[in-house]
Image (cartoon, rainbow, N blue to C red):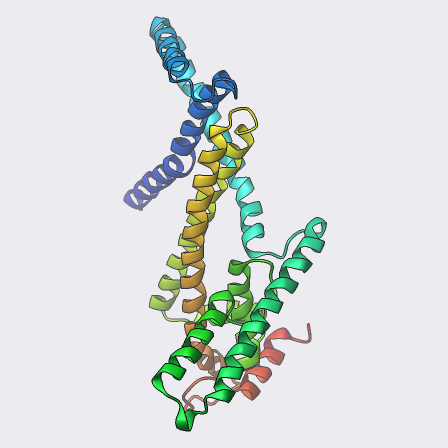
Length: 303
């Protein structure tokens, strides 16, 4: 057990350094430069070199105790910024997944309305192609047109949009598909389904969820740089770059997470129904809507 806790402490220290200290120290250094340069000398390399040289020379003149205090102060500032960014990660996640706060309700309504209109237009176009090019006489080129139209629908959303963002609609689509295909209220069923999933499945989903959390943490570092951009505009460019990087990573992670979660429901929904006595142990295949509705009624307990 002593070895276990030593390894755990080591991993926690590495994670602390990775998530807080290093990016925090980079921001503190950037902030120190930006505050000195301001907009007037934003790209003045000569002035920047002078600032760095003066800071280095000042540090070298200090006694060892003062240098240690300065290093500790920088580390504390870095950790403080890191903790603030962790708090801002909740805002980042809400912006990406929704629903948005009441203050942004009008904007959310317009976004959802626009996404629904675009999605329905694409679905109608696909249906028109399917009705025009009947399966019996459909050529490969016509099938390609239908497949392309279907791809455009799925690229926007896998079900009718209900959130203001693409990532939010990936989660919303998972909930919608679970309800429409299986009659399951996933918000109540998922915690119970998780307990009957095989270890390999849970590991895959946990990994995807961890990737999304890491992407959220990365993108959240854009906030302090954007705030610093009010004093030194190059910081805004850094913030945009960091935010875009996290956003791209988050889209990929959400895609993996929702695909794996839907597959877990397809393959293990019956295991949950069997465990709760809704389905017979000798039955095979995905849940039927009737079984899903019975399962939902059982786990909701009238709520």
